[in-house]
Image 1 (cartoon, helix red, strand yellow):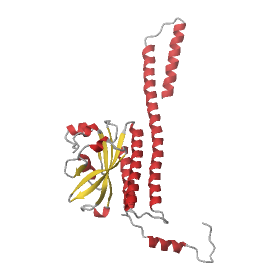
Image 2: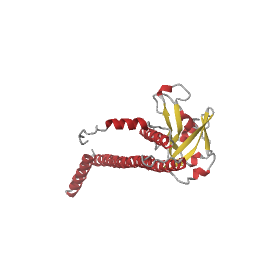
Image 3: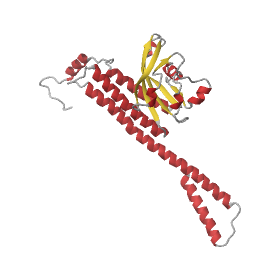
Length: 294
């Protein structure tokens, strides 16, 4: 459409120029027709440029996905190599923290490519205090962020004081648990958003928050149906840039990755090494029997 519109506009202009050179009068309908064609060509051409730019951003995103998986793989391989597994909790904690900080930086880069605005990505850890939870910052895509100096540093969950965490942690089978707002200012005016941080508008006006957790389908309806480690948050100072759809699903995918990584680093996942060793021995070729080379 852009190509044909451009050709038609050019031919129309050339025809008008030829008429003028020959001293012929220009018909009254020619100028509006050419103007309309030019306008359509400009609109379609601009849209084509935007689509091309979006496609280039998506291709760049795939490389960052690859880098994130590299970070997880390398840390796990170094920490838990069969010959020299790390057992020092301090070292494990440090490597977990530095890896997640690097992952948050890559996620921030992904969202800046997708929405063309600066984004901050944060991992918050939750601690259960009776029936309620509190959450505080673990790592952020921005090192030494200005918001880290503001109070409060600990946020309440399930008290109504923080809408984003209350909504994100809510578990409904078959529904993706998350909080999304494209315009926090509008939601606050409508009474749909609350935040313990009084000057939150200084740092973000749009946000996505998802839980870092595992939901056990066998325990649906029970208090311990979910194992909540924290929240993964993406926010930006721009309004109506983040989308409730693909952008939410991407954050959820990263949160699931983080849950597995954090549980491995904290020794919460156990592998039956003895059973694996026995199985490997059973697969070895019997002595004297020729191997098939595989």
